[in-house]
Length: 192
Image (cartoon, rainbow, N blue to C red; front, side, top):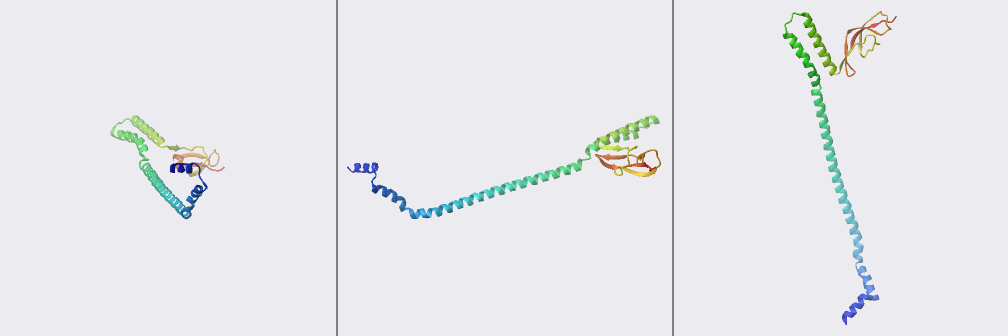
């Protein structure tokens, strides 16, 4: 009989049972009041821990980025140093055949002036080609307007050309990649 009574209680709750169910949580009311403070403290601690982890992560990322930047800067500096150190290497390689030709001319004992002249002309062509490969270009401004950045006037002469026009070149000038290596020495037409 006792079991029947328990079954009836579980199937048909009475007002007393409902009051007991409602009073269950009410018994824990002092703990419920303390729980929000604990929850709030736990939330703050979790947020603090999360912020500290984020700060640590950002600091590590910053240090990695700083190290990478330093490595890139160092590599670029080394590349510039190598470029300065070996910049003339290609130009020097182009000049070696000229040197070989001059040395061969000195060892050859020819009395034929035509052959010597021919050898000098070939060597001059080799030298000119080596200079052109090094982007050294000859400036021969005959007939051009005088440019003080590229020409150096030695004198002004009466001429039929317009005033301030180059009449003759006494010494050729040279530029390397549009930068004047040596200005051309010129005479300029005087004003009429």
